[in-house]
Image (cartoon, rainbow, N blue to C red; front, side, top):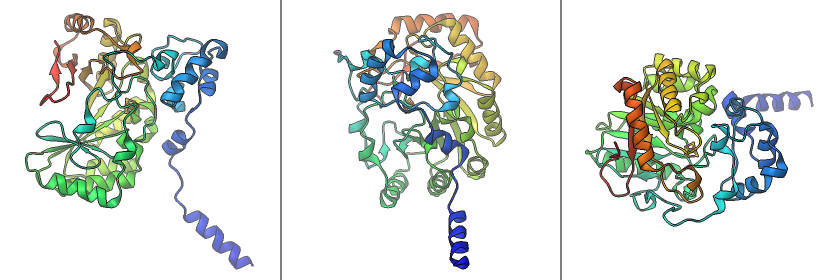
Length: 343
Ligand code: SF4
């Protein structure tokens, strides 16, 4: 009897323990009621709209991000990015569930091919936060989930096309998968001789900075591929000490750090905010890369900023910042061979 108990203990201790970031993700706020309570908003005023939006695209906010939201302020620029609203249920002409027409640009499960030298690989549909303005908020990720055989098919497709020199890991959020799987992807992609760069598009280190683990750093620094991490920060308030420390570790590991933002009404559509964002990004070792014009996704029209206003902001920004801190204002138009500059 004693022996059987000991065996059971051994088996249990052999089970992998979730990493801190995985526990934070598992405990993320995922109901409108909990979100309103955490941020101090009155349910009588906000719950009906939040529940309606939540039914269309569920609430997901991890605690480290929540801690950066001001209490009791419905206009907080971080809260606006995650709080579902009644407006999300409104259908307007010109707004589509698939504004970039990505569903028709997929040659093989998991892969999206828009540009000649780059391919986008969707390693997971999972995110660590659900951003209300996301252009993939209705994307059928289930159609792109990857079995081991499908992963091999992706690698075979990359290997068959020598015009490719860069793979972009996307999602969902590619860093939502565990470090073992990230390592396997890195090794498999590095095995394709004409691929030189790996780009990772991720918001995870912003919303859960603990995602930057020693194993991730080792995988990124140990690859023969040049690794570029493009984080997604929209507002300077998103940059806290934990995020800054995580970026410092990535930089030490030799990762090139860039940022992409989306211009969003009520979040960052002001020259002071965009200026402060570029300055803060540079302080933590990140260069501003793209400021994306809003993609007209159904359910998020209340974030839309007119192109005329966005270009005026960029003109103002150029008078305030050195050129290397001014992101490029671009729009992605379906079928075009590259992004389209707007200014
Ligand atoms: S993290 Fe990125 S992919 Fe996920 S919901 Fe936010 S914007 Fe969309």
